[in-house]
Length: 413
Image 1 (tube, rainbow, N blue to C red):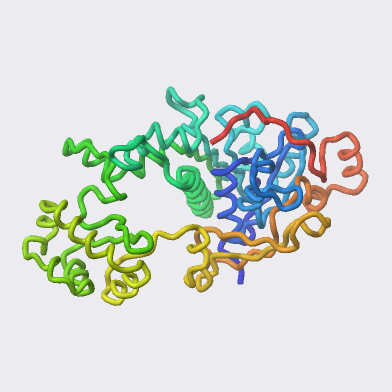
Image 2: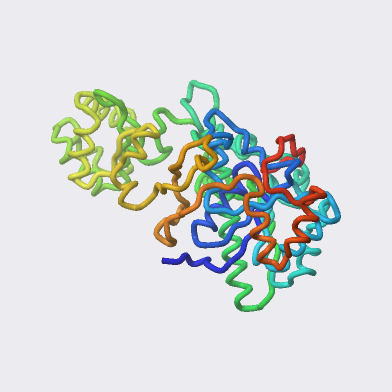
């Protein structure tokens, strides 16, 4: 099995999360992703704790498996020349530096298009390349706050909170991967590449969808709700069961009828609650009644009974329980790849969750690379001979080992 992006070569000038996740999604779809790092300014994720596989951060490994690595001094004229040779044979260049950083390196979209007119370039930053916030650093935390999401997260009587995962970074990564795929389709028609400017802030504001529409068109002001409840659908929230929490979503009236049948308790059969409007009007009574019933039995029993009746529900799992769900194995969502144990310092095998479209490509067979692990291999594919490779290595322009990490100072989303 090959992936739909087999034969596409992507140069990954990314660090931390959003950009590497975009490139990981492309690698999982079959693209040949080459991670390009300056040995003096490597991806900061390489040193993020608390878990390490030998000398390699498990955080880094989770975002960079199935990629190859080239170590290249990007700030030197010789290193830039090598980078442009890579660009000449690539299909895509993806970066998540702040606007202007690639230009300082002499790798701006116009320069790259002059080298390779068929090249697709995608830049992912906090706020994009235009507007009054373009130069601001943008991270998942700050954009969740700025875009209004933290005001909706948490209990009504508590402080604002953030989502449990870095979903702005992940969603931004997926948007960047979508931009790559769309531009490649366009190139198939026109023969020319294009540049796409992707911003985490844009993606987050886009995801406000119905909340923004309510605010702008109906004057409705969304706010934090108790027990993670939906602002307009009742019941749609978490409930305390006898031994944990149950997430329940009843999206329409037939679903409510199935819930009533599954609970088999006359207290929920009130005719006034049979409609969506009625349940919204009597929200407090409906929620109070359901809470009293659901608290009497364990989560697993309710999941079995209600699922059998076609009612959407689930236990509020921890990460370990989520990964142990049989659906994870059935869909091939976890891959087993080589670890860093070949050097005698880490594990021999490493487990990772796959990209968002695991059925569209083959399971990965390679883990995350050490810095510069594939420098010689990749440049040899471009026609670099042994003497030239040796000269570049001797002057420190290329590297095949991990240098002492220092702050890159570029700042990215």
